[in-house]
Length: 411
Image (tube, rainbow, N blue to C red; front, side, top):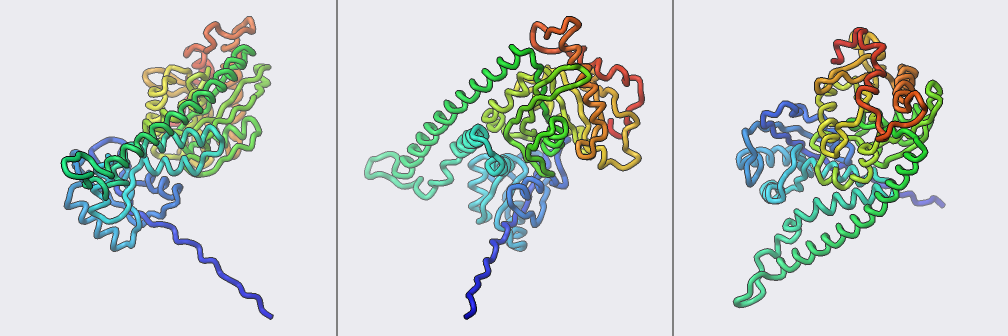
């Protein structure tokens, strides 16, 4: 007697048309490569990329009536199931575009929120994502109840069931936002207590920061022999992980934290929601700014990270630039020296070149960190009074190589 077998057919991956609008900004991604990465990470398969040039966005349809009709025909021709814009859309623009095209329309902010929701693992990470999604949803309630907007409650009555439902939803979301914020405030207090304990123990705090997929988690694992999740994808890590790193050259241990990666046009709501996680960077004594040296867009990515650091109040913290992934560079772009300095904002900042994957340059990084630790601790073995190293102090980590030629291809 034969057994019946049933083949399970996997659901097809949703396809999406990617749309970017060029307003003449210098950092615009004409190939929409980063948006394509975001779409793939969120579970969408890009089937077409469209770039539209405009001087300013259309108030109602963002790209104008004519372009919307072209976009609709293109999406139908490719059998696309969704439209994704590289810029943030207002709730009205999103609603109008969906009505005109007849397909779901999402923006960059929504994609990032979806990825964050998939990646969050810890209780704190999930709460932060929930807060950001609630804040995003609260501005788009009208889309869910447009079929009730024009209903009226009776003769002489103002408003109706639709408006009542919107108000109910707005109040429910407002209450949910308050609950999540209260819970995050408690977690933030716990983190603050842990940081104060480290400060009392005179343990310097170092945080890894950088653009998403620059290799922060891979470097973290290589330095502290941890097993944090690391992958060649955007936002592989959302939850802050802290470990002790012993630096033999300095004869002391430091606290090393791996934080969430940054990205261009990171939604302000996400920055606010992840305040508890980003606080590790704000309270750090030193920032290891990890840069993907193999990415042709690394100067723009470096600038974007600096902008986010400015937004969260961490721009004045001393930095050590760590140019990662040199194993992916062609021979002509290999650095001439694994340690030098790089000008940032009129200041020479120490820089090291490494490959977290192969281990190349890691000894030089540890030496630079050890030099910083000795300066941080001072000759008498005690920490600085304000708990931070001076900016001049960390620059000393690169003084030995400041006169050596750097990699012209990477500057």
